[in-house]
Image 1 (cartoon, rainbow, N blue to C red):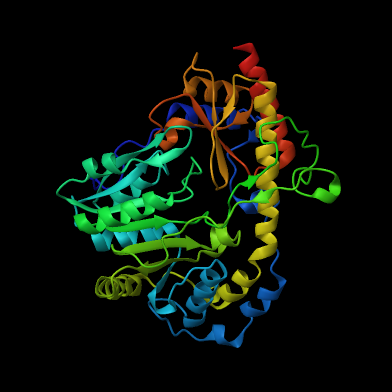
Image 2: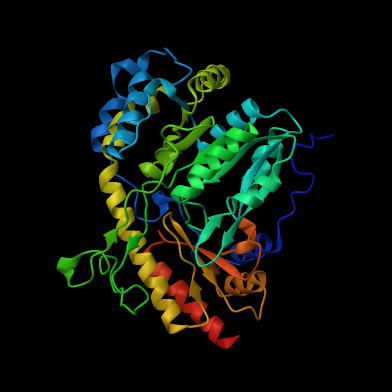
Length: 417
């Protein structure tokens, strides 16, 4: 049988995945420091108020709106208002996931063989998602000079004659970086001048990292609340101002994505969205075409749309728990780096993962494979297309005891290597 070139010709696992499968087959009890699923890290929200919506008599009717239920879109607009941002309900389109949102946008903006520009390092999903739509990915670098930045000159050099869109992720996954105001304005002007759309993935936009007083000093995070509650006798974090967003007035057509998976900790409910902004004529033309694409699939279930306003209203308790877990995870990583000075924690602004830099005497794949042999799962940096190595990527929302045990084994490996 012949398969399309849009799917991989070789599905053999890479060395890390092969070693992981071997450890699992051997019955190893693994410490998973990559886990970023809130339903598996003790952070899953309880939503008793929303359960009534599942038995609502309205669920017996099917009256789909290609852009999504009007009340759901209104609730998303209200969520942005709470963040000091203005998104019009009629300029929002619901999707089942941000992956589907990417697919819709790649289909709408680029013909087969045309290109989209994506940041490097960032999500490993861009290449397969684009390939599945027949679109080519060209990367542009995030430069590091003590913090991560978009190099606008390098970005412009990467724009070829077939480029149709540029993707930004803020906070970036895994670097945790966001566009500074000058970068944001420069990107907007560049995209408008070169006729490109901007796709802004902002799924972690509610999760700035806390600013812990005395950052870098040793602390003893004996309990998850140690770094988060002043009344418990420890430093209370000063949360950063709201993370930047591309919602708002833009020169270039701009598509901002987010969803319940991260905003509410409900990945199983499969509801995300695209908020469209930019020049009115271009925005309206894009919305008509997005509506046409969404109507082909009608992928968001009626129950999820019906309950979405309640889930968004209930997000705050979940987000508080995540902020506490982020502060706890960062404190633990800093303590590990203090105990093992050969390790260093790369700076970031927000998101659910952090990047550790290891000694250059070994490759990051060697570090990651040896950690698997010690029953510790971490992602090597090349999964995210870092330009240099060795880096390891660690989830900040892992259960604290698991993170402590995994970091202890990492410290032992560094000391023994």
